[in-house]
Image: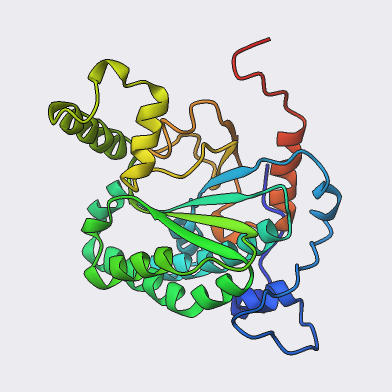
Length: 286
């Protein structure tokens, strides 16, 4: 699958509010009221009644390459990627079958990047949360963060904690799971360590540990999403999981697109979702 078209310059300046309200002439409601459901873009409208993935997970890849193609600093690629994420959230809010969206925003391995790039990414994440969290809430989006938040700047992980503790929207239209400082192998190791500690303390019988208990421990340690993904999508042409949801995604459908993340739009999303609806998921049985 390829990109659905070049990004219009005006889109980059839109907030989630403009995407969801579609320039409605009525003023936005108060922070205690939900905004109306947005109108789906034409490519996605025919899919709204189909069997779409309840949990969509996305590896947001290609920001730096997008910037390099335009002789721009990588930070501008990440900023452009935020606009694509805003659009994706808006589209998922408008697609009732999609109940959870998990996005791979910053991996455990990303800490090995140059300090200037890491700092820029941390600042961008914090800035985006400050700018968009209230609006997301008014649109029925609940936030959850997974990963090793102890490595994050204190102000950022405290911000993540505050958003998770926030009173849920009156109607939760979408659970948005943001993977920050996340690595699946690291999460699995941490869950295994916690189970071993609990067994050693006599809190549980080690012989009773099974897949269900292990999955529950991953969720309990805040290192895993609350449900398994049904579809894992990677943009940017790479065809690997890159340490993303290795345990939870064991039976997820996989999809890749050549489209670099900042160019991701409703046309590309529609093509990906359509291929999902055409697959027959047997989960290993007949």
